[in-house]
Structure formats: structure tokens, C-alpha cells
Length: 230
Image 1 (cartoon, rainbow, N blue to C red):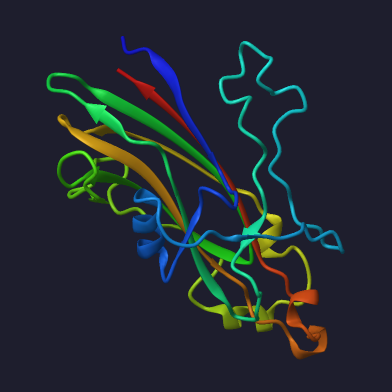
Image 2: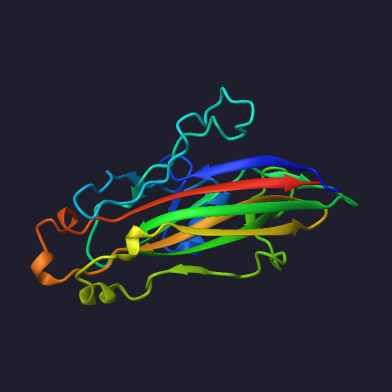
């Protein structure tokens, strides 16, 4: 029976999360640790208030049964300045890991995320294309359990849907959850990359303000826990 070990916790922040022109480019940037980082944004507290992803108060590095206790809480992030109908792409990557012949490396990935207003998310495996120092590229084919599954919350490709919404519950009041597991290919150097596309809906004219971010803020917050079994 395989033994499971804590591998990595990835959280939204302004240091190791990377932006891209689209979600695929953000994923490539994160895998190669290159490009621009997102901006921090303040939590919306005017009703309705944004939800918040937080650890338990005593989930810290002093607890022997808290493998990710040293990882801080996730930040709210976006690509400022915020605008109506804006779409922004983000991604984050694990460190690299090596798989060996005749060894089965199984990973379990659990994602929780919030976005104002809508989002896509994807979990992908990237592989090193050559020797030490070579860039990482998306592995093909993707392992079963990752495949090309695109997670969707709200209407990320139709910001105009916001013009039809004027009362709660709003999409951004939901926290989204997803888990999967996969087996990494034998022999290679890989990274697990989680990417997002966030969309800020248009708002009805009566709620508009100058600047629009006063009444139409945008933000993303996420946490990804990864365990490995060999």
C-alpha cells in the first residue's frame, strides 16, 4: 500500500503567482518562474462582503500534525487597475520533482478558490524539455486525472451577464472546490501548475461609479494542497 506524504501547498500571493496574456501563457510563465506578478487587492467588506479562505487559527508551524502550517494564508490578488469586463490570467507552480524508472508517483490535488466574478481553473503537468536549466513545457499527453479538464465557475467568457444581475446571491459569494489524483509519467522532471482566468462582470449603469473599481472590484483567492504517494 502506498504511503501518502504532504508535497506542497500553493496559495494566491504577489511573489510566486504569475500573470499572462491568457491562462495558457500564465501557466507557462509560472512553470518557468518568469513574467509579471499580480497586485494585492483589499478585501471587499461593503455588503455583500467577499468570502475569505483562511487556515484555522492554530494551524501553524508549531503543530506537529500541520504539514503546511508554515504557509501563510492566501492573498486577494488581481491585475490592477480594475475595470468593468476585465479578464485576467494567473498561474502558480510547484517546485520541480524527479520521477524514476519502475517507480509509481501518485499525486492528489485539492483546490479551493474564490473569484469576483467568474473564473476558469485548470491543473496541468509540465515537464522539463532537456537537461538542467532547460525550460518547462506542458506535458503531452496529460496524465489521466488531469486530461484537459477545464473547471468553470460563472460565465468567464461573457462579462455582459453582469448586466442581468442586480440582487444576491452573487457568483462571487461561492467558494469553489475540486479534487483529483493522477500518476506522473516515469522518468522525467516535472512541475504541477494550476492556472486561472478571472473575469470581472459588467455592472448595471445605476451601480456604476468613477472609478468603476469603487462599486465593481475584482479579486481572486485560492489554496491548493498537494500530497504524493510512492
